[in-house]
Image (cartoon, rainbow, N blue to C red; front, side, top):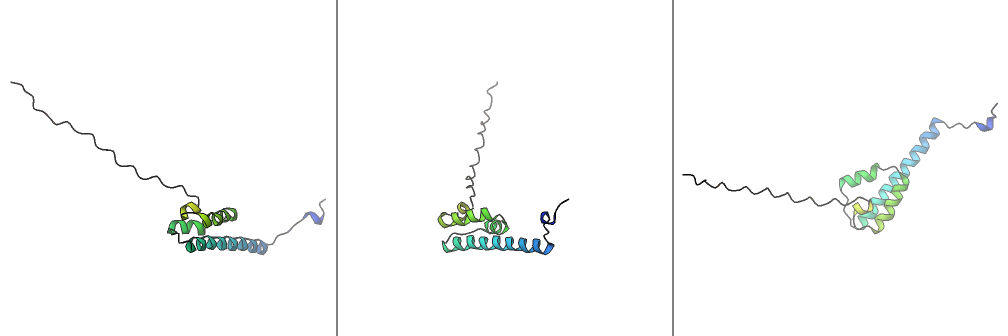
Length: 104
C-alpha cells in the first residue's frame, strides 16, 4: 500500500498560476528582444514581431536576446536564413526566322 508521502496533489489553480507565470516570463523576454533591437535601430517586420510574441520557449527567447545584442539585423537575431535573391527569368529561346524556300 502506498503511503501518503507518495501522493502529490497539484490543484487546478496551482497549474493555472504556474502557466501564467511562464507566459509572463515569455512575454517579458519577447519585449526585451524588441527593446534591444529598437535601441540598436534595427527594423523589425510585422512577421518577425509576431514570431517573437508567439514564441513561448524560454531557452529560444534567451538565445534571441543574446543574438540581438550583436546582430546586424533582426533576421540575424532570430536566426533566420537569408532568402536567396530571386533568379533572373531565363531568356526565351530565340526563334529562327522563317526563310522562304527557293523552289521554282
